[in-house]
Image (tube, rainbow, N blue to C red):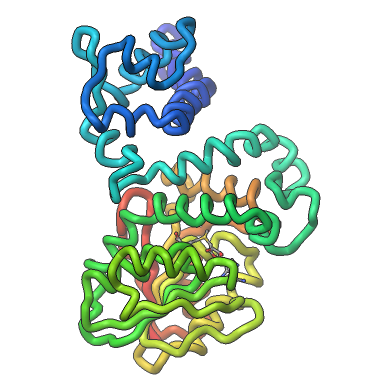
Length: 340
Ligand SMILES: C[S@@+](CC[C@H](N)C(=O)[O-])C[C@H]1O[C@@H](n2cnc3c(N)ncnc32)[C@H](O)[C@@H]1O
């Protein structure tokens, strides 16, 4: 045990006041700070005026971004870091800020009700009042929110999507379906890297136009098509490989097992099932992001939760898959591959 004089409250304070830093970044994304600076470094006065910052806030806000390592400053000149320039400039295809825009517009407020969720087990998002078993009904009722959510999913998923497109041994397979595809970034990334494959993006009908716009803009619309469907009511497409990114964590255990069973039924013999999520480590003590994502599912869904690789392998074997393994993708995301 360390002596009392060696103990510091720094870590407690950093975690406890972490929302200050988080909200500064979320507001900076909302106000387009990084998109503005992607056009070139700017003097303080010009930057503050282009962003519409009040004189009382402008120095502290911009310098807080410098101190947080999100901007650089030399004399009076502010500029992006390499990372904020690549990932937070809205005009670049590498932009991942959609998820931060959604965090700012939706999650930041909903998480204020975490204690209530912890006590009641009930979702705290738009669905709080409607009692629907699907969190997507209320979310998709507003077309702007639908589009924002789908673009946000591409932002959070792109590094894992690119990893799956390159890392998985696609050569023996011909067809694939990305189930719960959203904007279709995984279906698109797989097609871009593997010209021998044709793919399907399967999702609720409301998602179709957003998927089609994205696959056309990505230049793969001749090999990737949208199939409307509901995985609770319809069979999944019969293909060689089924992928599911950030799907299983939305649902309770019985629903998870039902979806895994449907994937097993739909796959051609010798096919593969790729599930990916921010897996919790098997010991449930290290992967902070996976554990917090699971609490986010408490806020966002009636029964969803995140899970470990061992949990998922167990469910896949129960559904009939002959073999299953875990591979790291990118950041907190891991895939679990089940072989039929
Ligand atoms: C959390 S998002 C994941 C999106 C994408 N796979 C990714 O990882 O970025 C969940 C997706 O499942 C879709 N979805 C929800 N319920 C569904 C259902 N019953 N049938 C088909 N898709 C559904 C949603 O529309 C949404 O696109």
